[in-house]
Image (tube, rainbow, N blue to C red; front, side, top):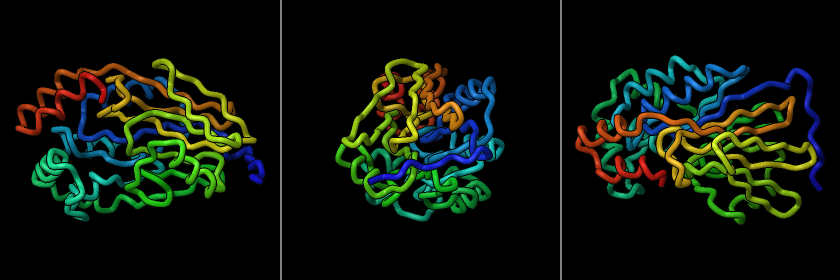
Length: 257
C-alpha cells in the first residue's frame, strides 16, 4: 500500500518543466516568452536540447542562459556529444545527430557531455528522468509501461520526456491515462495518488498538435498545467531544409507527429 507523501511548506513552489527542444530555436523562444509571463520558482529540463533541428549551437547557448535548476541529458544529447555513436537511431535521426556533432562548438559539446544522467530526485516527492527512471532511453508509451514505473516508484510525481507526447498517468490503483484536452489544460493532483507526467515536446511534438508544449507544476495548488504555444513553424522548417537535413524532420513539424 502506498503511503501518501507529506509536503513541507518550504517545498511548495511553481516549476517550469520542458523537454525535447531538438534544436528548434523558434519553438524554444516561443515557450520562453510564454513562461516569462508566469511566476516560476524552479526550472526543470528533461533532456534532448539537440537533434533533428538546424540550430544546435543557438539552443544550447539559450539553455545556458535559462540555467535550469534541474537538467538531464537525452539520447540525442549523448550522441551529439560523442558519448554514444547513435547506432540504435533510425537512419534519418542519425544523419541529423551526426550533422549536429559536426556543427556543435567545442564549448557546447563539453556542456552536453556534462549534462547529468537521470533520474534526479527533487527531495522525496518528485523525480525527473528523460525516458524512465529505470532506463534513461526507454520509451514510456503504454499503460503497462507506466504501471511498472509507478509500481516501483516511491515518489508523488515522476516527470519524464522522450516520447514527445504530453500525458498524465495516474495510479488509482489502476492506471488512468489522461491526454491534454486543449492548449491550456489544467489537471488537479491528489496527494493520495501517484503520477507519471510528460510535458510534451518543445521542438517536435508528436501528438498531432504542432504547437510547442511545456508544463507548469504548482505543488501548493496541486495542479499541473500542460500548455501549448504557436511558433513560426515555417522558419524552423526552412532551417532544416537549408541545412540539407532529412525532409521528414521539416515536414513533421507542421503536423505534429
